[in-house]
Structure formats: structure tokens, C-alpha cells
Length: 66
Image: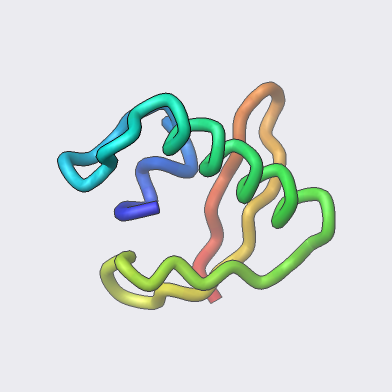
């Protein structure tokens, strides 16, 4: 992921996503994995703190910096 907004909108690709559908699938997989395991996620491209937790929010996800 290139920006925390993609946690909330994983279907949004950036200009760096060369393979659009695969990028969306990868984001959804990573978000679900992190949320279901309460895993600390490191989004190296995120501004500020790149470490945080993903949680499920209805059909989507939320981001919380640590």
C-alpha cells in the first residue's frame, strides 16, 4: 500500500500499481490477514508513523497508527 487511505478504499490504486487487479487482491489479502491476526502492519510508504493496526469495520477496514 502506498497511502493509509487505501486501508479504507483498497480498490483505489496509485500510479505505482502496474497490475491493477492484482494490486487490489494483494491489498485485500494483506488487510484481512493483518486484521484477523491483530498483526502490527508496517506500511513503509505511509506518512508519519508507518506502523499500525488494521481492524475490520463492517465490510471494510480501519487503520490505527502506533
